[in-house]
Image (cartoon, rainbow over all chains, first blue to last red; front, top):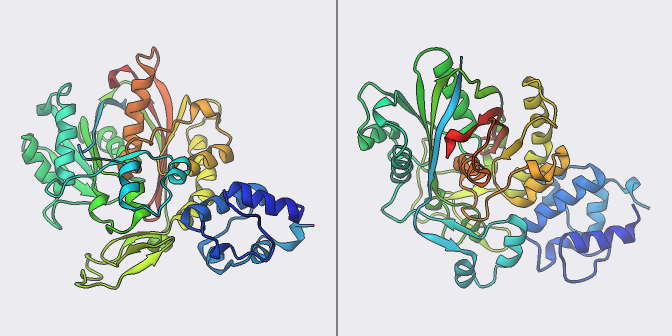
Length: 76
Length: 338
């Protein structure tokens, strides 16, 4: 998946106010809560067939770290 | 020889809490987003002097408008909100309802998977010839376990009770069931204190999760994302297993009624399993997540929506959650239900 598209998809599916950058720390966003976490799990599962665990969610910070969890080879 | 559902009723406490009311109380939590994602508009909470047993009694009284209570031979009572640590709440229910003293009665402690387990237990009791009917009751008051400042869980969970009367029949109304258990998921949905492991603590440490939801070890704790993850990973394949053991394809059942935990997760599951929208019943916006009550409530509401049906409907029921525990089966619903 194209990284730019992924940033847009994240913003849309997670229903976030502001545009995202790869360096944006998701956890520090105003909107971050267990509902957004749930939306993220659903999104990553649907788009990449990857299941994010609670541990994964705990360690994820920036979008970059999320990309790394999913697998950088899935992105261009 | 089989078992069929003869009657099903449920009861919601009168204290209705809407999202507007919660919004007033918790000004900085976005209930509009909650409503659209989780799919809950209102939930009902037992009052301070009302217990799950009281709710169960009301559900049973409703049932007894069409069922003769002197016929009841056995009570199977599913709850995680027992009246006391002991004695068994089902015995108290026997007395409350004035049932025969020759009934069997016991409680079992399960949550979201409870109704399906209860159905399979009833099938076992009846088909083995031990009794000719079972009164299956689910009753829950999670509201009493949730910290007053835990906005998320206060919004999700609701109290309720249900009563289902299952009887011996020519109809094979309860087909094959499958089960699952994973104790490694214990801490994902737990009340740590108050059991034999840890006593309740006076002045417990206040913990926070998500966006400022407060709880202590005396209260209910749920790791929503982990539960969603577990559900997403296990339930699609499990549902296929349930169809397989019943010799059915995905297209054959009339309806799928899953534990109604949250609508986002349900839609996710529906798409993942590739069930048609029309066959996948979701009805939780009024009532919320009532734990073991969600399936019986949904079944009753489904039947009410449909009205009289000529032939029995085949319904796949799947419950999953606290334990971690899950169960699924295929049942039939017919017009005797309304």
